[in-house]
Image (spheres, rainbow, N blue to C red):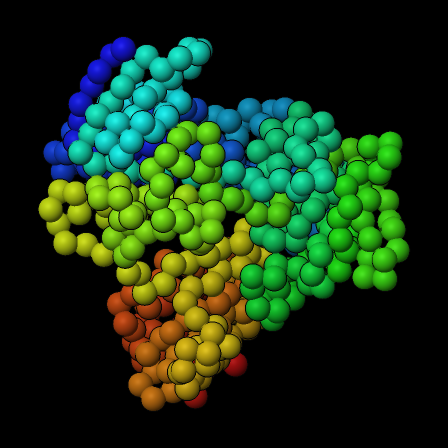
Length: 467
């Protein structure tokens, strides 16, 4: 067996793992990164990036189809069509460039990448089985072990993945648009992909056990998304429980609140009921770490219950966001190098890439009240924003939540076309301790959607200018 030694082993080459490894390399820490599949993890390969590519293509196709009809802005096109295989090839090209870039950055910073399946021996030793091998051929010993194994799509016990039952991974690599698509789960993954495939021409049914869509977001934010779903002709089945496939295996069996059965024929059934930490199959249990449910329990520096064993990202539970994992990975590398760091962000942005998009950062009004704050809130609608009008997208708004006594900004929420790009401004204002006056008195470029941010702050102060 090939025996190697290093200071830091990183298990998992997703956003958290590769950022940790790159930063460690920059800091001069000898580092080995072990990845069994492609660098970039779920996010770059079968998640964030490819899904946004498909969403963009679907939206562009839907706009072309709209222009083929009665376009009020005067654009006319004839009989648009889409070659999904070519779309997927374009998407794969983006993924390839990004994952190749990650590999180049790791190499540039002196990180040794081992392609293979990692198995923990103990908190200081990892065996690696290279692709195609049946037994481990490499053993790496370390001083510090960073666990960044990510997460897996959650299955339903009565409906395992396979055949017509797919996860988001398979949904992002279909060879053709299904005639009918049933989506189980009205969270962000289910609705992002369900809306995309509806725009591509599929008949889409969305089944949700709760009585509303996007239950993680407050209801006022989801109303424009619900209107868009209805406008697209997506059939919603809220308050319906999934009972698996029918006897023939060609339809989804669901029951409503009254216990009445409904069969939804579907060529593909996308199960999008969340993700779970990837804890099985690589020896994690041998370390006997403290756990928080299915997740590895960590402290404010991402230390586990074992000395010099660290964990970051989805493996540590919610929120399962790539940018959270990246920030944690960078921090761990710096702590190992001797810097004094803690993971204590003032807020972590969350974005839902439906159409319209939703972004939330910090506290909403109910959460602020629950935290003991006497807060003021104000909303500025995109119906009063000139840029939104020129984009033909005036549904939605920007909303700010701030303390009543000193006007400290506690949170932002927005729904509308392109609002994901406002997330940086929202996060920065909270991280820097901005007050309403800071935002309201900052000159915002005109005409932009960002003006709604300024106007929301001014409205909270009692003197909005454009409403």
